[in-house]
Image 1 (cartoon, rainbow, N blue to C red):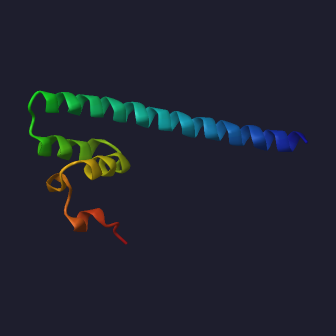
Image 2 (cartoon, one colour; image 1 turned 60 degrees about the vertical axis):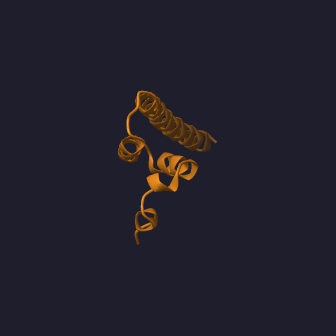
Image 3 (cartoon, rainbow, N blue to C red; image 1 turned 135 degrees about the horizontal axis):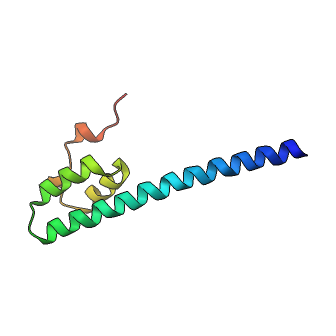
Length: 84
């Protein structure tokens, strides 16, 4: 029984660590998005902002943004396809 409890505790600690990493990633992404939104409000070229976002935020976030904006800002189809 103690071994099962130890395995459960180890699994829970690993999950807590994963959640902490996700929280950090989300907080960093939020900050970058806020900064880039401010740049847009101040008149920065949207293509420059999008390029900056592609380089600094997780790929999933960038894809979600691209789906919401003008297709001119999205990367060419070749870049969107996963490489094998």
